Image 1 (cartoon, helix red, strand yellow):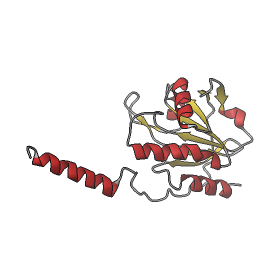
Image 2 (cartoon, one colour; image 1 turned 180 degrees about the horizontal axis):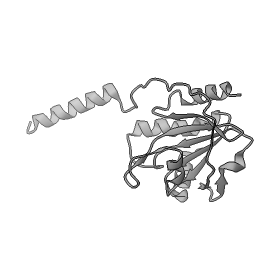
Image 3 (cartoon, rainbow, N blue to C red; image 1 turned 120 degrees about the vertical axis):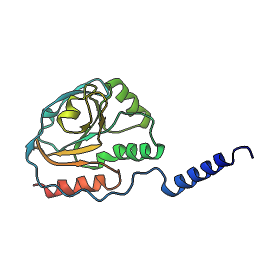
Image 4 (cartoon, helix red, strand yellow; image 1 turned 30 degrees about the vertical axis):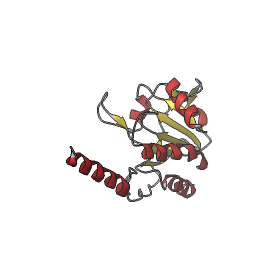
Length: 182
């Protein structure tokens, strides 16, 4: 065998992947937030169908904003599947769900079609809304969107904000918070 070290490296890599997988490490459940009572800043963004969506037009109903990284970038396949599954199931939260990424609206449409997502996707290509809601981390050009869920009550108040470090438990947490808020 010409490269015994290469075979050892391949074996260790396979073993590491088998043992750890590529799912996100377990993290403690996010603490339940108290009612934040901050008014949700208004915005208008283009959705996957090319229509303009204004947050204030949704007053009178629950709204869930879900910020996520660029729509179809290469990443660990199982992590991508985990979060795409979360996006696909966000409609289980009894709220109008707006999933927002910092992609152009036509790219968001491609992503929505490819994965057959049932919720509205909005493109925030200039990152203004993502930054306004604190979901952009890093510099102006070299940052990244942090997966973040923000629950807004029918009066337009932010009642819960949580980073989404793993998909498991996110929907249950949001439903629980929604039930606790009058």
